[in-house]
Length: 332
Image (cartoon, rainbow, N blue to C red):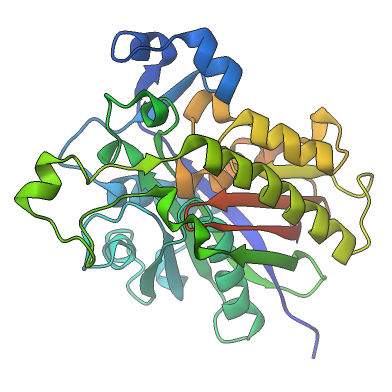
C-alpha cells in the first residue's frame, strides 16, 4: 500500500466589503498613516460591520467559495475543523453551525483555538486525520471577526487587526506531496502578554468586567514582538535544518501576517529573497486565524505542483511553529 500524505487540493477565501484605512483610523485615534505603515506594513483592513453577523458568516462565505471553485459536493466532506479565536458564542461550537450551513451534513465538526497559530495547528490536525486513512476530505477553515474584540480607542491594537476567513481542503495524496513535516511549539509564559482578560471561567462576565473594559484584546506590544520575531524565525530555520533544505530549495514563504517587521526577520533568518516572501498584510492587517489561508488563496495562481512552501505563525499563549508543505496541484 502506498504511503498516504495529506495534501491541500482546494482553497477559498472571503473578506468583508468595508475597508478601514489608515486615513480613517487617523480620525479615530491619535495615529497616522506613516506611523502605522512604517511599524506594521498595514495600509488597510476589512471590517464586518453587520452586528448581526459573527465569525460563522465569514467562515461560511470562505467555505462556499472553496466549494464553488473546486466544484465539490459538501456531502463528501468528512470533517470540518474551525480554527478561530472569536467563536460566535462561548459554548455552541461555531464549526458545527458552519458545517450545517454549508451542507456538510455528513461531517462532524469542532473548533480549534490557538490564537494566531490556530490555522497552522489545524493543518497538523487535519493532516493527521488524512494520513491515518480514516477520512478522505477534511475542510479546515480559519476565520476571525477581530473587530468584535478590538477596542477602537486603543491605538496599540486597533491599527493591527481585521476581519476575514480562508479555507483549505485536505485530501489523501499518493505522490509524496502535501504536508511533509512540522515544528510546533507553545509556552504558557505568554499568557499575560496577549489576552482577553474576562469572559472565561477565571473572570466570568460581570458588571465590573464590562465597566472596566476587560472583554477586549490587550497586548504588551514590545514583549509580544520580541517573542514573535525570535520564535517564528527560529521555527522556520529549524524546519529547514530538520529536512536538509536550503534557501534555494524553498519556493515560497507563507508567514502569519501580524507585522511586516516580523515577516522580514523570518525571511532574513531563512536567507530568502524578497520575491519568495508572500504578503498581503497591507490589505487585510492581522486576521488572526485567517492570515495563512488568505495568503494561500491570494497567491494560489503562483503555486506550481511540487513547489516547496514553508508556513510559519506566532500567536498568543504563546503558540508558534512552522510547516513544510509540497504543493499538490497547478491552478486550472
